[in-house]
Image (cartoon, rainbow over all chains, first blue to last red; front, top):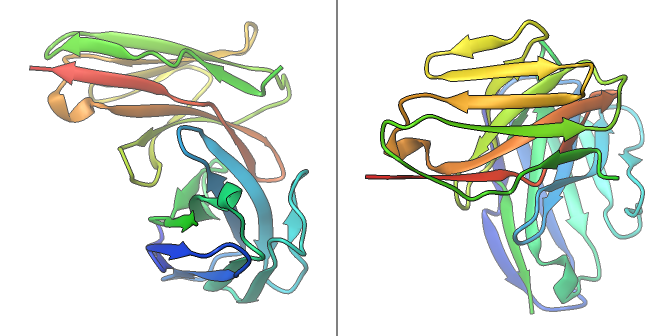
Amino acid sequence: SAVISQKPSRDICQRGTSLTIQCQVDSQVTMMFWYRQQPGQSLTLIATANQGSEATYESGFVIDKFPISRPNLTFSTLTVSNMSPEDSSIYLCSVAGTTHYEQYFGPGTRLTVT
Amino acid sequence: RKEVEQDPGPFNVPEGATVAFNCTYSNSASQSFFWYRQDCRKEPKLLMSVYSSGNEDGRFTAQLNRASQYISLLIRDSKLSDSATYLCVVNIGDYKLSFGAGTTVTVRA
């Protein structure tokens, strides 16, 4: 499976500011995904990011709030804009596997908004 | 109805015991199923894919019942290191995965 890294690993931000999270993969992958895991809850898909096309957002998530870039096949960013305390969460990127639609996850970014 | 539902537990078992738990899914068209393991403050890691005939990986056995739309995971000879949250995950099309809320397992010495 691919090796995935994320930066930053954690951050504490003030409300109203924005944070950009980076996801780097050690091999070229077509499909990357961004998830949110709120405290005590399971993972919720934010969007699918394919290189060369606009990200596809899930219901409840919009581009203005969570803009995504996918400049090449090994890198993606997710920005959390105009943050509020409700955005405090772990944000994870993942890549699609090649066998049975499995996904492999980065270590996550723990965001706290004060 | 949630797409994937799991018994949250917690399941508290002694070392060496067998523990089993299920999850149910709502999308009858789903074709791929997985169990992930998530340790506290860590990312989910793929434990095993679940095949329609059932499959085993060491002490772990997964079963799929398409007619009843449920998936099970059985852990034999539990180790302290098996303590984690186990996530039932279902592919819902277009490479998208739906995650259950997780079943917490604690193995005690």
